[in-house]
Length: 150
Image (tube, rainbow, N blue to C red):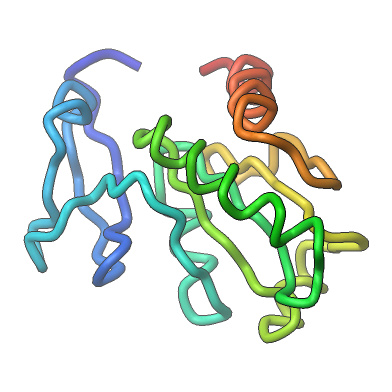
């Protein structure tokens, strides 16, 4: 991907799809609709209404944490996931609560939690079950990006 390539980024605030030149990703681009930042460095809560759009319409990688409030390892991994999101703002980090979003858990064939799935171009590249620390999450994403040829 060269610097003149336009990327599609789904706004984490209003869900509008924006076209942003790849060369502008480091410039903290804002949404053309709501004027909020497109790259927040914070995990986004997904649900049945917005998950498909964020996973399939973003040209940046999307990492989804499938979790539940009663899951101890999920709770332990929450700060690490947030720290990884802050360190990798050009990756969309998202969370899906499998307790309230049961259809999404079923759709993505989630058998244990926490489970992370890396999507690139709407395609699942890899998944990992079990809690990880911040550095492990970042390494896992980097390995997946390499696998995806990015």
